[in-house]
Image 1: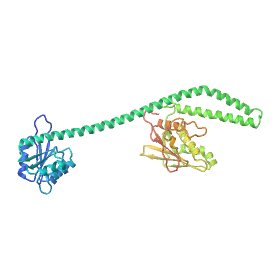
Image 2 (image 1 turned 90 degrees about the vertical axis):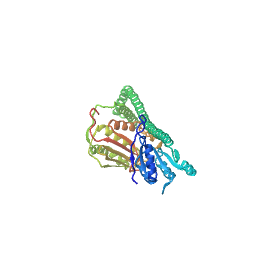
Image 3 (image 1 turned 90 degrees about the horizontal axis):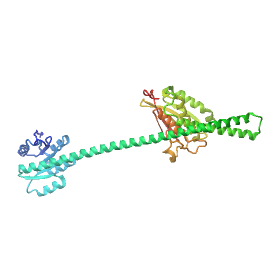
Image 4 (image 1 turned 120 degrees about the horizontal axis):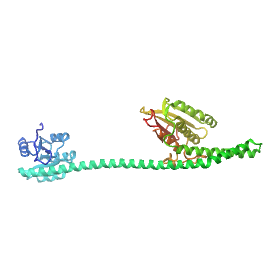
Length: 401
């Protein structure tokens, strides 16, 4: 049986007309109910429970009125299924005075809002419907408010996360500023004495032979001076202002990696370490070459210390979505200890490396971030550590470094 639609209007001031679905296998009963609701509700008719469920699947309805005695599916069975599919839709059962068990079953199984006994009185039916529509609208308003609350909570969580990130960036900026002041003090207070020490040690070395012990002492002095100069340089590089004087420019990635490979070839050969490359992308990148070289240099130095003799180091590259190049420096060492993984890129975090300043990876992150990129550590291909550097392929935005 095809559904028949009748559009009416509720009294002015109550909003758009509520939809009411009437389900009954008797045509006369359907027409009588439709006439009673005319001018108050938008009514839809169905001849049995299956047709009514099909209509509910396609259209939202405020109230369902169903007769109890119908072939194939009783009113209670229909209302129970309607309750499962459309929990906010209110359900009204039409039943005879003698069907007490059906009423109880409807309340328990069909979760009916109310029932109207046959023969029903128009005022009783309209009163029940009015209350049912009010309940439906309250439930719909509640659902909208709950959804809105969830959305607001998600927005608040996002704002909270942004606030935490901004606070972390502020703390990091203050830390960098403090290191900048420290670097200035170090440069002022130590560079002149170091230069004097280096000059005096050089004079001792160049004078008449002072014996084997003297030579060793001079050599040790010069080595420590060089180490202290390296520490000063690390501090200056880490504390350098974000936008340096050099600008990003197009540079061939394969040439940069080849320079790194050549710089470490003798050291790797001496320890039997294989330093290999796998450049899926070897074209042009927009970088500050000396800085990205320093990044790769730091990572390869760390890898050399980690793998020991007979190990393997791999420098690889590929592209991600055509927007960035991903450089990877992997090694066959023992990997990153869990004790420092969380703070791996923080300044002064070290793996007890002899002569280490704890600034190498902090400098790596700083340079990569200044290029608009990302850096993270995650095992890849070889069994040890792997540092991933994602750098933009194209030129920087106007006004960027």
